[in-house]
Length: 314
Ligand SMILES: Nc1ncnc2c1ncn2[C@@H]1O[C@H](COP(=O)(O)OP(=O)(O)OP(=O)(O)O)[C@@H](O)[C@H]1O
Ligand SMILES: [Mg+2]
Image 1 (cartoon, rainbow, N blue to C red):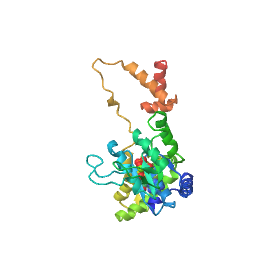
Image 2: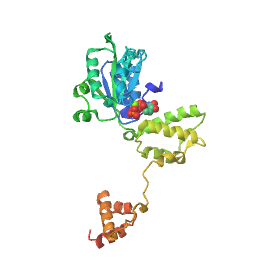
Image 3: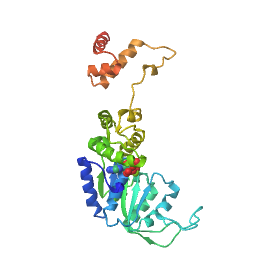
Image 4: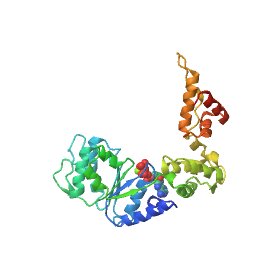
């Protein structure tokens, strides 16, 4: 099952799969850290699938998507009539996850006042739904995820330190895709198969240029971005190979050299030599005083750069 399988051939993912098995067998609270799209939810589902709770529900909740006023009810439920608009009983995610796992995504977004209540529930395993005086007991394993630095939010006073320690019993760190190039290739293979099936295509491989491009890109959106990229490339591929051109839309996201015309002349005019001197200085700094690279940044030849450096006494 793809949803619970961590695809990848890097040492990093191999270790992650081991970690997931080991912590799956326990009941510890896990905090999963990683950039957007690295597979935090996939890892959470994998931990659940390896646990004794596997046959019980896995309930995911995105803390960034819940309006503040509805937060408490969303987690702990409410009785009909508990507030305006509460026209039926709601169980809340904690009760839905009973016996299973509750996945709190973007946990750093939980409002302060809910953080206190959550801490209490985690410690006592009991709570009162809104408008109810019947104590509810739950048995729930908590897995959280964050792409923000939670320890920094603690330092800034935005996240309760005691809750942080309660949630962060075990930290699972998932590194960004660009730090594990082997996985770019194994995931690409996997996604090609998947989208061949979906679109009835028969893509077999990538041209060397296309492969090189995939390995060069920064993948800020990580595996989600790679998946979308391969989906489009398979859909538009003409033959059995994905070519660099099929990935052209990804290149479009890369920084391009800005035309010099962005410098607009102000009405009062400028001192052209002063501006040139200033830009040369900036280029040198940017290139860490490597003159060949500085010349390239200015789109002039190295001899031209040397000449100007002498002219301006730089
Ligand atoms: N190891 C993996 N193998 C296969 N598919 C993966 C893997 N990791 C992630 N994916 C796919 O990448 C996409 C993003 O994964 P997921 O939603 O778990 O990321 P996330 O870290 O929770 O992202 P966000 O921070 O944006 O919530 C999903 O489509 C998922 O199926
Ligand atoms: Mg997620």
